[in-house]
Amino acid sequence: MDYVSALVPPVVMAGLFTALIVTIVKSQGGPNKAKEDAAADAAIARVEASRQPVRDS
Image (cartoon, rainbow, N blue to C red; front, side, top):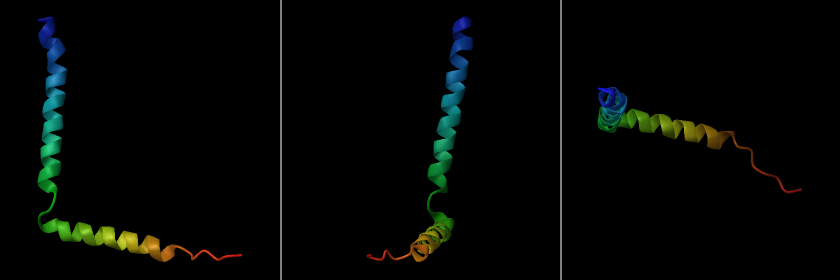
């Protein structure tokens, strides 16, 4: 019975990891993709707009 108690935690963790990956893959794209892309583009635009031009001395 020691082998059963030794194998249960890795099997449970593998199952949870698989469920996490499946959830991540299923949530990619779909109706929220445009909203996520727009948010990322806005963040990049803010960073680029806040950069100061480098002046030569």
